[in-house]
Length: 130
Ligand code: HEM
Image (tube, rainbow, N blue to C red):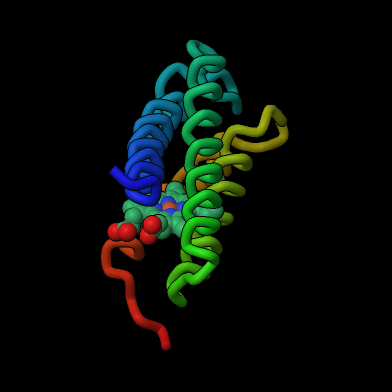
């Protein structure tokens, strides 16, 4: 199996891991919440799971870029913007700041889920913007 394919498979496994992490951590905003804070049970495990998935996605994405000599299609730029939206809204949803209301956290999670669905649709459809 060539390197490019291997890296792509690891990239996609990490995406699957991220979907699981977002669902599992998302539940902590609905079940057993403490005031404006998410359910603290298994917080460390969930943080580690999400960080691991994100790190592998970024590393394998960058590796794929290098292997492809940065020759990307135009939809790739839309993908990066959606990824940044996903990333920042997840940070907003789980920031350890008590002034962030539960409703704002849930809104952050909703934006993250919409961005992830758009991202996955984008890589499946691979639209030609040019
Ligand atoms: C949650 C975020 C992400 C999702 C869901 C995702 C999903 C995918 C999927 C499904 C593919 C395979 C597409 C195909 O060839 O049919 C892919 C390829 C690729 N991804 Fe991502 N990705 C994400 C984040 C990133 C990031 C952050 C980068 C760059 C730093 C990146 C760079 C790439 C590159 C360069 C390829 C092309 C690999 C190749 O054609 O050999 N991805 N991505």
